[in-house]
Length: 317
Ligand code: SF4
Image (cartoon, rainbow, N blue to C red):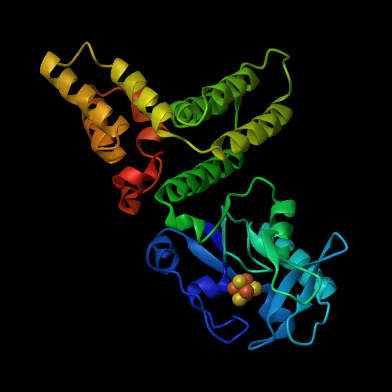
């Protein structure tokens, strides 16, 4: 499972000043689960060290200008960005983590300067390489490393990457209608935690009332599924999913057990305990009652537990 990374985040000394930007989360945690594929457009064309560059608004057009010599390097950067975006596509990635704020790699809020040599700017630009990757693969999960400091964005992003990978494996496994229904069903509660409406849309595709051919059905499903998993979940929707799941065995447990798990759900909703505390209880009952439908639910085990993303109360808003 491969993830694209701005090379400086791996500690490669490819920044304009010859330094790196090693990111602990990327290097120490993600490297255990993913093959990290580095990309640095600027080092390829300008070498390292090099003159720094910035995005400049020139008569409404975004140009890339070097800071010292005021050279317009837009064309070179666009060309290498396009080439590397094609490589990223061929590399078959499941996601991309870009370096924030960079005129090449920043996904959003990159400084866009006025064309008068001043330091007046607005944070509304996108780096040329980040833009090229997203144009080539609009549904690829992408984030910049700055935003991953937010536990809520981090949890959503990692969940999206693993779901993206699952869909990819499914589509490459000679899918049948039966397998599509199984795949769809396994994602019910994970997608419910983002949007019940999206799950309905996906359900209508799977129901196939127009009797479409499997290939076009899968293409339609893929687009809607990738759109759904890109949505951010929230505490309220997640709480509702917990109650839905509890409903499967509430008649099989004692009143004390029911009260305990309900109060745990409430404590999660109020931000007192992390989601993982409730999930562990639910998984215990799923195991005890050997519930086949729930055992397959990705919501209960969306990614390796060692990532511990649901152990943070701030991972839900
Ligand atoms: S931000 Fe992008 S272009 Fe700049 S050094 Fe890092 S990888 Fe290279």
